[in-house]
Length: 135
Ligand code: T46
Image (tube, rainbow, N blue to C red):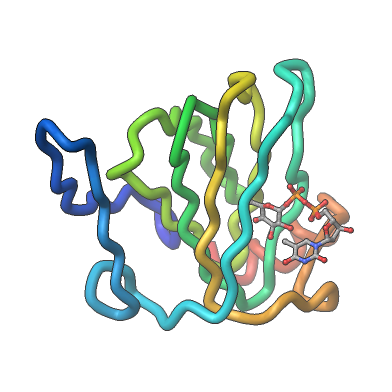
């Protein structure tokens, strides 16, 4: 889907465990200005239900698993994130919903901008109007 897709990272693993390095502009297509992580989400909870106007993000399930539903006005896909060396890139004007979090899951997010509530589109009808100009 345009503006959305899986990125694979190097995983340096061995008998001492596993290490996944991620470098701005080398392993991902933007400079990282913000990092946050989502934990302790009950399995029946769905989060998200929004899009961003300008933000680029990479979602990585560092532990456990979670499903991400992404939509544009014409397409819908569900990605299962269950591998800490795989990231889901989500660019501007992609609607996202995160669900089926396992109890131990840690959803790590790398973001291209500082937090800005004005960048969110939380109304689905308004989202469709805006996204139809791009898709
Ligand atoms: C996204 C998905 C994957 C902050 O104060 N700073 C922050 O950096 C963030 C991300 C959120 N917040 C506040 C805003 C809300 O009062 O934390 C509260 C929960 O945020 P929200 O309901 O937007 O959380 P999610 O899980 O629905 O969405 C988050 C990100 O907001 C969003 O950009 O793509 O994770």
